[in-house]
Length: 461
Image 1: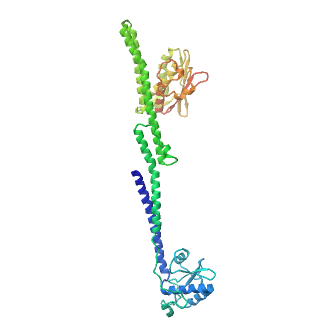
Image 2: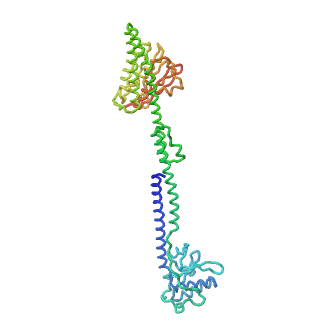
């Protein structure tokens, strides 16, 4: 067992033992005080014990009536009085009984000054001599025939030693054993998942990002289970990030391999055919620009995904931003004779970083132009809905297969419908990251009859 187990064990054990000893001492002192109070309520001298024995013998041989006559005779004499109380708490001569005395009679405590006598038919009485139960004018000195012992027929004798309540050793030892067992179980119950978490952390530190602690927790429902689930989510996210970095490195190396190969071919042609140097240099320049664009997009996506990019938000009018995006896109659309219908009917003020938001909307609009057929149309509209600005961009392209819509925002993912159209598959991934930073949402939906509908929701400032 680890150190944490023993810390929990001793803590719980000491806590339980303190409670057990404290409760035992409380009841022991209470019983001891009750016993001392009872000693002041009952006579325990030789005279009292001799009278109790005489009353017990009379009750046993003569019955209830004989004891009643005896007690009535004694009540007329100046001597200590014997009380007889049945099981229902009624005194034979209807004399009052004090509270501590009544408690002593109804409890199961074995007090030597209280004797139980029975009638011939089995009815039980408690017999005792109260300390203040002497008849008015009675003498404290016993009669002459009581000074030298009980009268004939009385079963008397010298009183035994006084006994108080015994110290509760039995419950304390029982509490010790029970505390050891339960403290061990509780410490094991708490320390076991923590030990499992430590082992899981060791596995993750060793490079195993598949380590999970949730299944080992069983059906527990406590904060340790929540900690285990948080650990599992952490490892899942770390694993996803690591896999994403590996895929990113793979995709970048794959995308750069083609332009690098063309650069090498262009350099070779320049050496072999100096007369085609101008055309070869143009080709080399175009491939270098492609590599530069690819690296720029990769770096931008990496900064967005890592969260290190701090937004510099300012007040932005969406209408002005869209006008600028549409004007730049019309130049590219004119090459394919595509007409852009812009209907910015609802304008709104946003809090955003203008250049990033511009890039996000431009990626969507340029994709609409890129994948639309020649001589077609692209529509851009705005609306206000539930304190959000809605931007709709629709085209008449081939659309995206329904099975691929959920993957379209992944870096370097390109749908099968893209065909031979050039691209790296980073535009929509960058758009998604930018909109997430601005608390925006993007939805993509295929239109009936062909085409794609992109909906962007942005919160109004």
